[in-house]
Image (cartoon, rainbow, N blue to C red):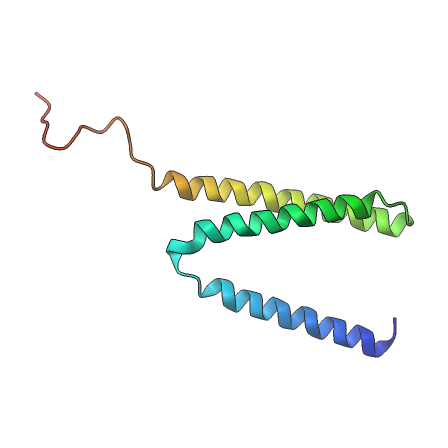
Length: 105
């Protein structure tokens, strides 16, 4: 990889990270649950790609980096679903609460 390619790649990575941070930080709280579900789907696609990379047999470097990618993507997917479940539980109606208009005697 040439120096120019490396600099251009790092520039795109930093710009994408900064733009992603700005986009996510401006999302209203009402949209966090659908956004988390969408990012879980993207992480699932990343997980499939990392499994392919880990098992492609292109060498030890590819296998080790693929394993690290599988581990990271799995943690991201599981954590995302846990957070989504926690957020959805906040909107559930409690079933053991008394109905409106009824008084306990």
